Length: 210
Image (tube, rainbow, N blue to C red; front, side):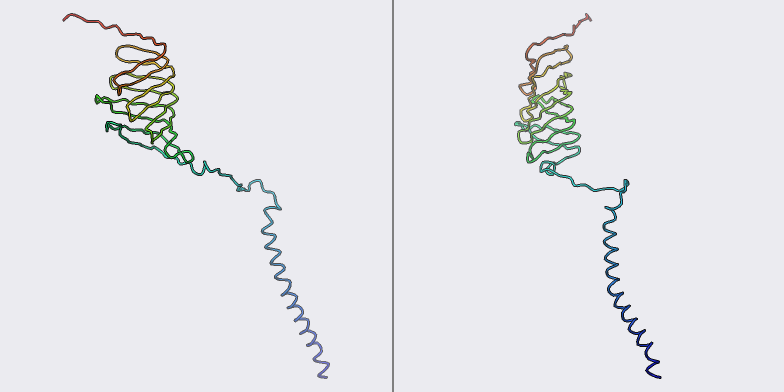
């Protein structure tokens, strides 16, 4: 009787052992399949709202570019008089660390007489090593005597208090209006020459007896 009674128990024990072994094999396989499905799901399902991060190539000049907001450069001319260059922004390109591309630059120089000259433009290029400022766009130069020059490009040698250009220019001051094909402000701002064909319209002055 005992042999007949123990037979079901042996059968159940063997079935339980096989089931445990089966689960030990299947559970890791199911877990691996779930992980694989999770990783592959974004590529299997198309989603227009999904944000994709693409690869961007950055060239060496882009990486090395330096951009400054509201920069201010201060220096001295060869007579130890100050000059200043400011801009809305300045961008350094590549390895040319002494040259800056300027947006809306402004500059002012102190002349030998103690007077000043100011300049502004749409854009410019400033060579800090050579103290050279190239202006382009709507270029305006102002002298504190009341003279204003308007042209499309000009070069300022800041260390020499000199400015010149070969684009058409118009000057307006207390004595009248002068136009020319270019200009040259020399002798540290004491003399302004209009080059090429030049015309002048002088204001008539009247004197009254006391």
